[in-house]
Image (cartoon, rainbow over all chains, first blue to last red; front, side, top):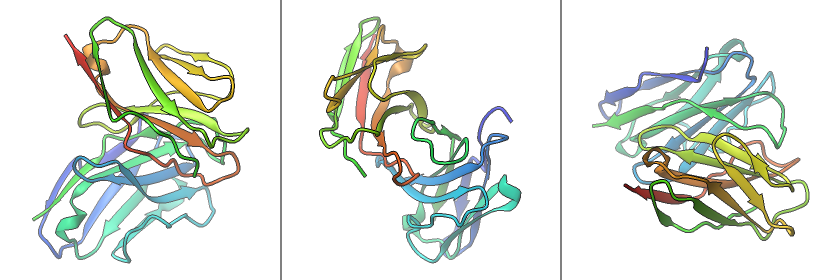
Length: 116
Length: 111
Protein backbone atom coordinates (compact mmCIF):
# COMPACT_ATOMS: atom_id res chain seq x y z
CA UNK A 1 0.00 0.00 0.00
CA UNK A 2 0.92 3.65 -0.07
CA UNK A 3 1.65 3.87 3.64
CA UNK A 4 1.85 1.87 6.85
CA UNK A 5 -1.61 0.76 7.89
CA UNK A 6 -2.56 -0.07 11.46
CA UNK A 7 -5.78 -1.54 12.80
CA UNK A 8 -7.84 -0.96 14.75
CA UNK A 9 -7.31 2.76 15.12
CA UNK A 10 -8.89 2.67 18.57
CA UNK A 11 -9.38 -0.21 20.98
CA UNK A 12 -11.02 -0.19 24.39
CA UNK A 13 -10.61 -3.38 26.38
CA UNK A 14 -11.28 -4.59 29.88
CA UNK A 15 -8.41 -5.22 32.23
CA UNK A 16 -7.30 -8.84 31.99
CA UNK A 17 -8.39 -9.38 28.39
CA UNK A 18 -6.00 -10.13 25.51
CA UNK A 19 -5.69 -7.76 22.56
CA UNK A 20 -4.16 -8.04 19.09
CA UNK A 21 -2.92 -5.03 17.14
CA UNK A 22 -2.18 -5.31 13.45
CA UNK A 23 0.35 -3.57 11.21
CA UNK A 24 0.56 -3.69 7.41
CA UNK A 25 3.93 -2.27 6.35
CA UNK A 26 4.74 -0.62 3.05
CA UNK A 27 5.13 -3.23 0.32
CA UNK A 28 8.78 -4.12 -0.14
CA UNK A 29 9.87 -2.85 3.27
CA UNK A 30 11.64 -5.69 5.02
CA UNK A 31 12.21 -3.95 8.34
CA UNK A 32 9.28 -3.45 10.75
CA UNK A 33 9.27 -1.79 14.17
CA UNK A 34 6.80 -1.43 17.02
CA UNK A 35 6.87 1.51 19.42
CA UNK A 36 4.46 2.73 22.06
CA UNK A 37 3.75 6.21 23.29
CA UNK A 38 2.04 6.83 26.59
CA UNK A 39 0.10 10.06 27.05
CA UNK A 40 2.45 13.04 26.95
CA UNK A 41 5.52 10.82 26.75
CA UNK A 42 8.13 10.04 24.12
CA UNK A 43 8.30 6.96 21.93
CA UNK A 44 9.40 3.72 23.55
CA UNK A 45 10.90 1.01 21.34
CA UNK A 46 9.29 -2.41 21.69
CA UNK A 47 10.45 -4.82 18.97
CA UNK A 48 12.10 -4.88 15.55
CA UNK A 49 11.87 -7.40 12.70
CA UNK A 50 14.33 -7.55 9.80
CA UNK A 51 13.72 -10.10 7.08
CA UNK A 52 14.20 -13.67 8.32
CA UNK A 53 16.50 -12.68 11.16
CA UNK A 54 15.55 -13.25 14.79
CA UNK A 55 13.61 -10.20 16.01
CA UNK A 56 15.13 -7.72 18.45
CA UNK A 57 12.74 -8.05 21.40
CA UNK A 58 14.83 -6.00 23.79
CA UNK A 59 12.14 -3.35 24.32
CA UNK A 60 9.22 -5.60 25.25
CA UNK A 61 8.25 -4.55 28.79
CA UNK A 62 7.06 -7.96 30.02
CA UNK A 63 6.32 -11.50 28.86
CA UNK A 64 2.69 -10.47 28.39
CA UNK A 65 3.83 -8.75 25.21
CA UNK A 66 4.66 -10.69 22.06
CA UNK A 67 4.77 -10.02 18.34
CA UNK A 68 5.02 -11.99 15.17
CA UNK A 69 5.48 -11.19 11.55
CA UNK A 70 4.05 -13.64 9.07
CA UNK A 71 5.52 -14.05 5.59
CA UNK A 72 7.78 -11.08 6.08
CA UNK A 73 4.86 -8.68 5.78
CA UNK A 74 1.98 -8.21 8.22
CA UNK A 75 2.81 -8.05 11.92
CA UNK A 76 0.64 -8.62 14.97
CA UNK A 77 1.44 -7.30 18.43
CA UNK A 78 -0.34 -9.27 21.16
CA UNK A 79 -0.79 -8.11 24.72
CA UNK A 80 -2.07 -10.76 27.11
CA UNK A 81 -3.91 -10.06 30.36
CA UNK A 82 -3.94 -6.32 29.71
CA UNK A 83 -3.26 -3.91 32.56
CA UNK A 84 -4.20 -0.25 32.86
CA UNK A 85 -0.57 0.77 32.42
CA UNK A 86 -0.68 -0.78 28.95
CA UNK A 87 -2.91 2.10 27.82
CA UNK A 88 -0.97 3.97 25.14
CA UNK A 89 -0.75 4.60 21.42
CA UNK A 90 1.00 1.69 19.73
CA UNK A 91 2.90 2.78 16.61
CA UNK A 92 4.24 0.63 13.83
CA UNK A 93 6.89 1.73 11.34
CA UNK A 94 8.63 0.15 8.37
CA UNK A 95 11.72 0.85 6.31
CA UNK A 96 13.74 -0.62 3.49
CA UNK A 97 15.69 -3.55 4.77
CA UNK A 98 19.09 -3.89 6.27
CA UNK A 99 20.86 -1.53 8.55
CA UNK A 100 21.56 1.56 6.49
CA UNK A 101 22.04 4.56 8.68
CA UNK A 102 20.77 6.97 6.06
CA UNK A 103 17.32 5.37 5.65
CA UNK A 104 14.23 6.82 7.27
CA UNK A 105 11.23 5.11 8.77
CA UNK A 106 7.60 5.50 7.72
CA UNK A 107 5.18 5.36 10.63
CA UNK A 108 1.53 4.42 10.73
CA UNK A 109 -1.07 6.50 12.56
CA UNK A 110 -1.10 4.12 15.50
CA UNK A 111 -3.62 2.18 17.54
CA UNK A 112 -4.89 3.96 20.65
CA UNK A 113 -5.36 1.28 23.31
CA UNK A 114 -7.39 2.06 26.42
CA UNK A 115 -7.59 -0.51 29.20
CA UNK A 116 -10.50 0.07 31.56
CA UNK B 1 23.15 5.13 21.58
CA UNK B 2 24.62 8.59 20.96
CA UNK B 3 22.66 11.29 22.78
CA UNK B 4 21.12 14.48 21.48
CA UNK B 5 20.00 17.59 23.39
CA UNK B 6 17.15 19.80 22.24
CA UNK B 7 15.21 22.64 23.86
CA UNK B 8 11.90 21.49 25.31
CA UNK B 9 9.87 24.07 23.43
CA UNK B 10 10.08 26.93 20.93
CA UNK B 11 7.63 29.44 19.52
CA UNK B 12 7.44 31.06 16.14
CA UNK B 13 5.12 33.29 14.18
CA UNK B 14 3.45 32.18 11.01
CA UNK B 15 5.43 32.84 7.80
CA UNK B 16 8.65 33.49 9.71
CA UNK B 17 11.71 31.21 9.58
CA UNK B 18 12.29 28.78 12.44
CA UNK B 19 15.67 27.43 13.52
CA UNK B 20 15.45 24.32 15.69
CA UNK B 21 18.80 23.48 17.34
CA UNK B 22 20.20 20.11 18.33
CA UNK B 23 23.43 19.34 20.17
CA UNK B 24 25.14 16.00 19.64
CA UNK B 25 28.63 16.49 21.02
CA UNK B 26 29.37 12.74 21.23
CA UNK B 27 28.62 12.10 17.56
CA UNK B 28 31.06 9.81 15.80
CA UNK B 29 32.27 10.06 12.24
CA UNK B 30 29.79 7.70 10.61
CA UNK B 31 26.64 8.71 12.49
CA UNK B 32 23.83 10.19 10.42
CA UNK B 33 21.71 13.01 11.83
CA UNK B 34 17.98 12.40 11.34
CA UNK B 35 15.03 14.66 12.05
CA UNK B 36 11.46 13.52 12.51
CA UNK B 37 8.38 15.44 13.52
CA UNK B 38 5.15 14.33 15.14
CA UNK B 39 1.99 16.29 14.49
CA UNK B 40 -0.80 16.04 17.08
CA UNK B 41 -2.53 12.65 17.07
CA UNK B 42 -0.28 11.27 14.33
CA UNK B 43 2.73 9.00 14.10
CA UNK B 44 6.17 10.57 13.59
CA UNK B 45 7.07 11.69 10.09
CA UNK B 46 10.54 11.67 8.54
CA UNK B 47 11.75 15.19 7.76
CA UNK B 48 15.37 15.14 6.66
CA UNK B 49 18.75 13.59 7.34
CA UNK B 50 22.40 14.41 6.72
CA UNK B 51 25.94 13.31 7.42
CA UNK B 52 28.34 16.21 6.89
CA UNK B 53 27.03 18.61 4.27
CA UNK B 54 24.00 20.84 4.57
CA UNK B 55 20.88 19.32 3.04
CA UNK B 56 17.71 20.76 1.53
CA UNK B 57 14.43 19.11 0.66
CA UNK B 58 10.87 20.22 0.09
CA UNK B 59 10.11 20.20 3.81
CA UNK B 60 13.14 21.80 5.40
CA UNK B 61 16.88 22.44 5.40
CA UNK B 62 19.46 20.88 7.67
CA UNK B 63 22.54 22.86 8.60
CA UNK B 64 25.33 20.79 10.13
CA UNK B 65 28.17 22.43 12.04
CA UNK B 66 31.64 21.90 10.67
CA UNK B 67 32.64 19.83 13.72
CA UNK B 68 29.28 17.96 13.48
CA UNK B 69 28.66 18.47 17.19
CA UNK B 70 25.46 20.36 16.49
CA UNK B 71 22.89 20.82 13.77
CA UNK B 72 19.93 23.06 13.03
CA UNK B 73 16.68 22.20 11.33
CA UNK B 74 15.43 25.19 9.38
CA UNK B 75 11.81 25.72 8.39
CA UNK B 76 11.99 28.63 5.96
CA UNK B 77 8.42 29.88 6.41
CA UNK B 78 6.54 28.36 9.30
CA UNK B 79 2.89 27.55 8.81
CA UNK B 80 0.30 26.55 11.38
CA UNK B 81 0.63 22.99 10.05
CA UNK B 82 4.26 22.93 11.17
CA UNK B 83 3.23 22.94 14.83
CA UNK B 84 4.59 19.62 16.07
CA UNK B 85 7.21 17.94 18.23
CA UNK B 86 10.52 17.80 16.37
CA UNK B 87 12.96 15.00 17.16
CA UNK B 88 16.69 15.05 16.39
CA UNK B 89 18.10 11.51 16.34
CA UNK B 90 21.49 10.00 15.56
CA UNK B 91 21.53 6.82 13.49
CA UNK B 92 24.64 5.02 14.59
CA UNK B 93 26.33 3.26 11.69
CA UNK B 94 27.01 -0.32 12.71
CA UNK B 95 25.03 0.12 15.88
CA UNK B 96 21.52 -0.79 16.89
CA UNK B 97 18.90 -0.70 14.15
CA UNK B 98 16.25 0.93 16.29
CA UNK B 99 15.75 4.69 16.39
CA UNK B 100 15.92 6.06 19.93
CA UNK B 101 13.59 9.03 20.37
CA UNK B 102 14.26 11.67 23.01
CA UNK B 103 11.74 14.25 24.24
CA UNK B 104 12.12 16.51 21.20
CA UNK B 105 11.22 20.19 20.82
CA UNK B 106 7.58 21.19 20.86
CA UNK B 107 7.15 23.93 18.25
CA UNK B 108 4.22 26.32 18.61
CA UNK B 109 3.37 28.47 15.59
CA UNK B 110 1.37 31.60 16.31
CA UNK B 111 -0.97 33.02 13.67
